[in-house]
Length: 279
Image 1 (cartoon, rainbow, N blue to C red):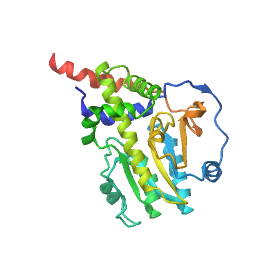
Image 2: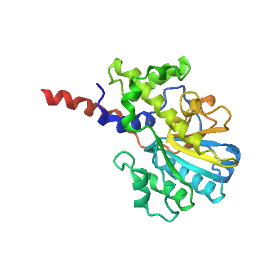
Image 3: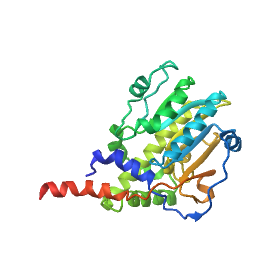
Image 4: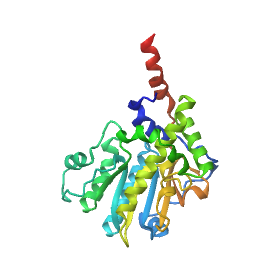
């Protein structure tokens, strides 16, 4: 049975691990201002910013874009993978303290360091723009694991691709019997984020979602579950100067590489602990 204590770590690992799609080398993109980049992406009802969670440069990029949109009065809402759906700062004044904001979002600093995401959250809050939790709460995960209807929510090739990402994102440590249930959780999370975004859309403004890159993938993630009539732009923030296939994202924003890291080491240790305890 799945150890739910691993869920936050697994979620971060899945998005931080490089997508197992064909990658082609390219140079870092020219330096453009936030205004220039937004001019290429807008108009849009929804703007997805898919990050690598441990890339500090990505959080800086997000903060700059959100601040620019808020300053122009074009930001309808900021939605986050980093907080559960149902949480919101909508009832808080624009000068609410960071502590009040964190309480309203039921922020889990062990899973998502506030030092990384606080600046972008507070940029929206200071502008009087609601910040919305968009992720599937842990309490809903078990039901999602058993929901076979979720298997039909993606085209068959995309569902298989998600299954492969689950295998590789968990470092090939999960028993095969857990692959489909975990894939269902991923799809349920994308559907919950899509529902949050759709409800926050306002004419003439843009709802921004900050999430891991897999959630922002147009072929696999949140865009698959958004209403067809919405204008959606998906941007891949990518550390290390590589580019993804064009159909997966509308744009790729390359940033400097992050230090080499064995993402599987911690997960291997977690999977070893139960066996060690029994010996």
